[in-house]
Length: 417
Image: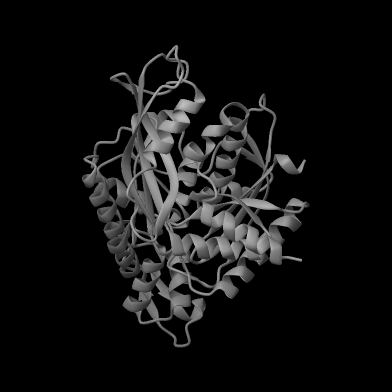
């Protein structure tokens, strides 16, 4: 039973979300059945960075214990999401000679090509998190999707190398291991979210997934079924709350309640007569403010987020040119009117992305805020199914615990009684 349980751990700036899934038989309509999903406030984490090990460990422990109670079984390991704000991406090409005398390309040849692509100059204090093969070339024949079984002498692979900041990965790994949980793999959170909110056809046509988090918004772009680019912008839902607090000269707690209860990025739909009584939301002084003014503040920040995303798309010449459009997900994407702003600024079809491809006993698994955590479970399910056929290629295709992470894992395993 335990080997059919997959856990996704999404560690955010304001909340830690855990999703526990059970692998279903291959003939089932869905790949995974969600048996537990919890969210707890996060402490010790600011703008995606761990600022207090002790507080972060306490928050993660609280979340994992709650997940164990709901799922009704112990959790021993998890796929852990990594914030896109601590990553870099670059393309790399690996070239090898086919080893067999008859020229037939085997798994081992693909693995060697991927390893050759890893031989790229890594910036100081960064290490490779994922190697994502985009396309192969066999003896000059470009655009090969799967070269295994083909015949050739020279095999090339073009890959997207995603590198994570070593200090962040080290601190993240340390926090998780101190809770007694082993790490199945460190996975870029936006890639995991994309697994949950897009389908193969959208990824083939060309789609951008934007995960609107608290401190930042992450971007991953697909085309031809492969990852074309990843990135992030340092603006998220927390900035909207801060804008409201500054604009109304009120506390952040009251501003957050205003955003959740009355917020909208479409002020044109709000009449000037609508007002908000701040005392009802916890303010100390009696004051009423115009809801339309609040929504104008929200709209301005939502436009900025979308403009920065469009700037990232311009870098790869895909601004306004993705047939499947943009999928907004994450907690910030649930804000009313956000999709309309994105459609206007990005000049693309826009949809709010909710996790799919799973069955569940809880409504939380269909919440956009849980998309990265559900995606981590789906990522683990992919690894499990692919491991039956091409286990050797998993580290390149799906990523895994880094060498540094394995060292820390051994250290903390020896310290845990």
